[in-house]
Every structure is written in C-alpha cells, then in structure tokens.
Length: 388
Image: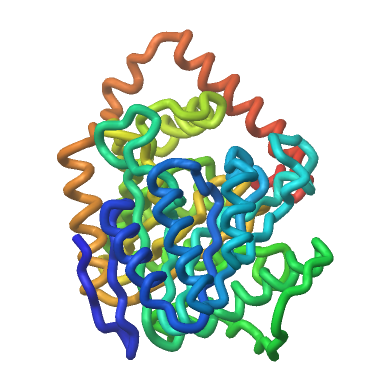
C-alpha cells in the first residue's frame, strides 16, 4: 500500500501493518533533529522493540529531546533493564499508571493509555493502531491487520498539543521534572468543514469526540459504510445508528475479528450478530491472523484510522486517538485494501448458516453478552450501562 495523498495542504501516507509502518517511523526517528515524542500501549521486548530502543537511544545521544510514554498495563512485561538502558542513554521514559502492573477491576485502573502516536520535530506525526511489537509474534504467519497514517501539515500542531499536554500531566503526576516548559495552546474543536482532523478521547473536554465523529458519519451515509474493528461491542446508540443506516438502504459492512482472542468479548460480540444480520448488515470474519484494525470508510469519502475500538473500554475509558479524513482518494485507498482483505482472508457470516447454530452456541453467546453487560455496567457507570 504505502500510498501518499495531498489533502487540504496535508501530506497523508497510509501505512498497512508494521511491515510498512516500522521502517517509516524508524527512518523519521533517525532523521530527527530536535524532538521525538512516542506513545504506545504495548512496547514489547522483542526484535522490533530492540530496533526502536536503539533508534531512540541514538537520537538522545545526538542531542534530540527524546520522550517515550508507555502504558503501565499494556507494556508491563517490558524489562526494567530495557527502561534503564534507554534512560541511561538520555531517553526520557514515563509510565501511564505503572502502579497497576496487572489487570485490576477498579474503574480508575481501567483508564489506560491506548493511543499509538509519534511526533518528530513537531513536523511529522504518525497516528494509528499499531503497537511496538513484532508483526508475526503469537505464532502468526500473516501479520496482524492494522493501519497507521504518516502526516505532515497543520493538523500536526493539534497532535503536538495533545502529546505535550499528556506528557506534562504524567510528568507532574510522577513528580518528574518535565524539562523545558512551553506555552501549550488549546486543541481546536472538531468542525465538519475540516478535511483532516485529529480526534481524541480523554476524560475531560473530549470524552465523546471519537464516538461523535463515527455517529455523524454514519448518520450522513448515503451509499456504504465499511467498519473494520478489532473489538466490536457497541452500545445501543451506536447499534441503532448502524441499523437505521441499513434501513434507509445504505450498505453496511462490518469487518470483525474471526480468531478468538478474548473469549468473553468475542462471544459477547457474536451475540449481536442475529440482530445485525436480520437488518441486512454484512459481517465478515477475519481469520488469517488477529484483526487489530480500528478504521472505517463511509461513502468512499470519509475515513478514520486510529487506536479506538468500538467497545466500552475504548469509547468510555481509555485515552484514544484517531485521524479523520474527508477525501475521496484517501478513503478509496483504504476501502480498496479492506475489500481485498475481506475477499482474500475472511469469510462472510451467512444469515442462513448462522441461524442453524446449535443451542449450546446460542447459550454461550447470550451468557457472554449478559456477563459483559453486567461487568461493563459495574465498572463504568449507570449512564453507560443504559446505553449497552
């Protein structure tokens, strides 16, 4: 893929999987002259992690301000020796809620840093869903399906604001001296007139920005919606938007995880299939490897690429970041790749076959959905529970 597009003064390069993403990001780090900010949910102690560790250390040694922000749960397995090695070389490393270490059911501890962002010299940024981890780990023979975008243009300043602000927040939380201070301007509010928009989810002003961007695009769809998502467990409002679109004649396609990764969530999602299939919504299950994409295309005009899944943890708890692009060439490029993956490495869930599942399958799905709904309601709050 690796295709570049000019959109409203921006240069956007769509990157597929780590095969395309890692070399571009490493090259940008190697070329950095002033500053590097990198945020990731998972940073693995593998060959890919070693490449990035070496590149970050080399950048710091040549005088580049190099800052790495890791999630305390997603990157909990990263050895302390790796962190010490980077810090000794001059890389500033901070943890987002490192004290958790392992899974906790307290709502505070479920507020994770799930963003995958990079900012180089405040000139080039990367937004997507790809972690710093070998593409072919977990015994895979085909890379995890995921996407990222390399960006140059005005929207990079919004990304810079968001990353700088979060770094300062985490730094002060850890009583860490954040380095040189600078005036941080406010992040621009999203407007429909903008063709390239950075949208994020936090716990303050931008709690529903990503969900709202999706819902507005779905409501305005006239011909087709293709939504590819790793963990799909939408609330009632989101499901109703998809059902309404299908009812008015829009082709709605869901491209979802076929392999079982997290059993409860997997079978809870499958419990939604009957209602969706009955409405005429097409469902494709990806089986070649793990589906980690968090992207969508509407009417081959609107597209989003980022870290946010369509589930309660992404939409209501985690810190997430997506890029929204309104451009036919960019959207078509992403759509073409999704269609190819659906045709080559997926199978369509046929309504006639689905209805023939035995009673045990139905019970597992319904029980999983009920448990997931109860768990989410308890962990989040009653307003969210009402929307599940």
